[in-house]
Length: 172
Image (cartoon, rainbow, N blue to C red; front, side, top):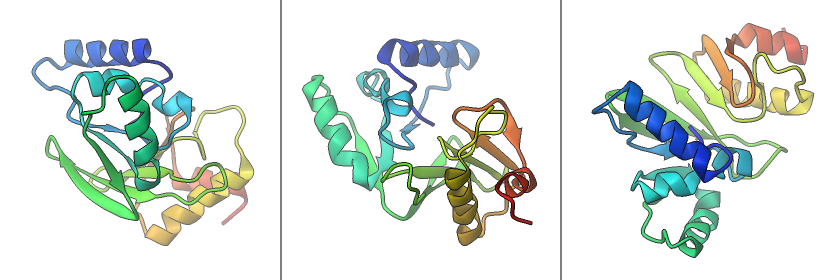
C-alpha cells in the first residue's frame, strides 16, 4: 500500500521488489489517502502501467495530477464504502476509514492473515501517537467487526496487537 514520498523512491521500491521476486510484478498500488508522504511517488507506478486504487473521494485529484504529468491513461479506480480484491491469490478488503485526520482515507484488511494496515492513525513502534486518530481507527475496526491479530501502520516499526491499541487509547 502507498507510493512513498517521491517518484525516485517509488522506482527504488519497484526495482527492489522485482529483484527480490522476479516474475511477480506489482499488480496494483493502493493509495490510502492523498498526503504526499503516502502518494508522492504515484507517478512511478502510473508510468509502469500499474493500476491505482484509492478512495473514491481522491480519484479526481489523482486523475488530474497524473494527467498534468502526461500520465492521463493511468488506470485509477475508486473505493466508496468497501471493496474486496483478489491479487495474486490474496484476498484484500479495502474499507472507508472515517477520521478527523483527512477525508478520503482507506484501511487495508487481509482477512486470512487477520492483519489491518492503516497509514497514519496508529503505527506500532512509533514514538508519538495521536490519541484521537488512534481512537478513530479502533472504532472503525470494531464497527467493521474485523477479526484482527496484527495491526501495521505506515509510520511505525513492525506490528502491534489490537489489545495494545486498546490499552493505548484507554479502552478495555
